[in-house]
Image (cartoon, rainbow, N blue to C red):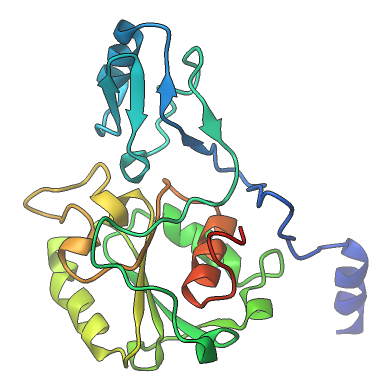
Length: 239
């Protein structure tokens, strides 16, 4: 036992810091940004290349809907197309969003994760957050196995038809006050799977959503950022 402890001690594994600018040091390629291009034709080319409709041409502007981006990289090498590399990806939905939880939840919240048809990418990023590199516990954030003890419902996946009732039941089982965070392009907009007869166009069609973390998948620091926002540890202005 002591040998394993010493090996771990000298291995130098450190908890990921929150550097100035909240830079996402991970394998995520980042997110494309709305960019003014040289010609309207170039913007239309990018619109045609995007498989999910995340890019819409408006004259020479290639306007990006981050919630629909699945990191296909088809616009990555485009001349002048800008990409962001930070972790401040979180934003409220278009409507019905609540603010952060009450102050008494600031250093102690419990999160229930629901897989509503995830392909595995977002769940893989979530699995890293409980490890030593990201260490959710340092923020007083804990994963719970039951929605009856959860303050936050963190949902991944587009909301497949088979999960509609289960997702709604999990939300209804949570005590008040409660918040919902949609993680990933599928939960935000349906991604490449929806809307369709088999899945919703994002989980906001099924339950109220308070924060959205776009990406396919978003890096762990972006998800940590969202959880810290929802429990009031940070604000958008402080970021």
